[in-house]
Length: 481
Image 1 (cartoon, rainbow, N blue to C red):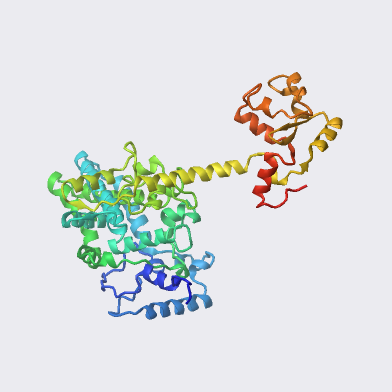
Image 2: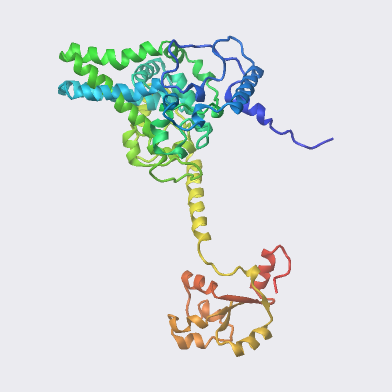
């Protein structure tokens, strides 16, 4: 009877992680994903078919891999005068560059009324918090659950940010967490600040790096399905029509509402959100882990409605908090907590304080170990030769610097004139065992003294505690002689 344990089937595990092991409800919108990069984050099934098996998906992947092995995708080709236009994602260029530029130009000719400014700021806040609390923490990470009211609010004002549907945004973001800092990461920070901020949207990605993540739970939410099916109409209305009507009907400022509360508001919230992909991977500290690029910084938190403590978030992604200390800026956390007090949010997820502090301690230890490796701690005992006591006495006759401390021979000849206790005291120890004097008999020496002494090691005395320790450290083998 074999005691061999069954190993996890990695292929099957990846199939489960991608969600291709189950049928997924078909939802299609009428105008693409809007902000999506199809080659990079296309859904994990063919939306034109009702029933798709795992084998269908794997076969499709195989054929695509063969296709791009034979032909270079445009992303792998150098930019030239003849093909530059093929490198560009023109839809996204219009959405995140063209429309904002038009709004900035129009703003130079249209007066900004204070009432319109206040309206724009309120709508900016609604849009931003709908991305961070809704798109990100609620749907992408399931950090909490929400009742119907908040979900509809987040879906409407999230669409007003012109950042794609919940379905597309959540899929892209789950891929980002699954493949952080790899070619499959849609906004791979290793490719530079500009690429992770906007470049990934404005250029065609390499389909070789297309990835999948399970979003079946998102599709089970009818709010997500409705928003995805009608995303274009919802986006246009909430981004442009709604702010225009609000400012027009309330303040008779239709044009100002369209430009400031519509176009420019969306532009600024886009740039703020993009900072989570760029700024949050560029500036700040890494208190929990430094294997990947995410960082914590208060400036990023201020810009992104509290998403700036990104190192924490990547370590504990399902925690509804981004900032865990009371003085750290995280209005999204405060909103979610407040909603929970009114029964509008529930199942708020947090990681235990023990798990959080484990991460902190491990990272601190990692930094300490790195610092330690750069310092001279003296020759390891296992690499020192072993001297008999008679050999020590004989060598001391020709060398005026040997002294024994704790069973280890040290050469202090170069330190005699700078010894803090005075030259005569150290000379009185030459050729002798000064263990008792060193360890409190005369002076109770500091850590610094012990560390300095370790850099002067020459040998260990046979049958001493140091020799036995060295033998134990070398797995019981004989100490080097």
